[in-house]
Length: 160
Image 1 (cartoon, one colour):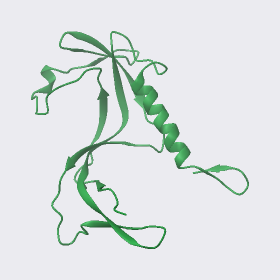
Image 2 (spheres, one colour; image 1 turned 120 degrees about the vertical axis):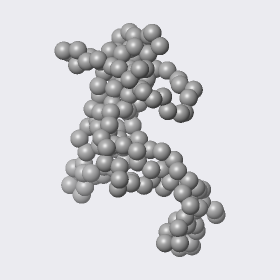
Image 3 (cartoon, rainbow, N blue to C red; image 1 turned 30 degrees about the vertical axis):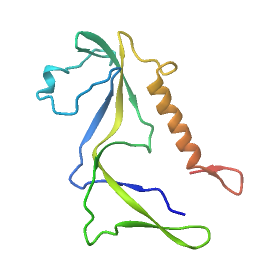
């Protein structure tokens, strides 16, 4: 049985930057650069750590959410690398019957930056963790990841 294509995630050694992700309540139909970005995006922070910005005349308020300890976020960029002779072009998978199967690599995702905080923006008000779909989604995915990577020990304790 043929395996689905594999996508590789690779951390480039040259990329050591730490960033903050901004989740905006809008859709941008542009993929090029917008130099200088300060002309379009210049958020301010008040004494309560509330961020305020204006995008195309609309007031946005942002709330900073930190990822829990032992978690990290990454921003990835897809690059279809040409396999070199030193690299193995296929990923070998051994199924339950002991038969070797291979899955072709269809590309590589390269790490652009890492982050441990993200700012979730909302129109005119602060994002609420109980009603904002992005904050709820992050919390739900963290719970799923925690469940997947934990197990019960012989004495009934939960370990990771």
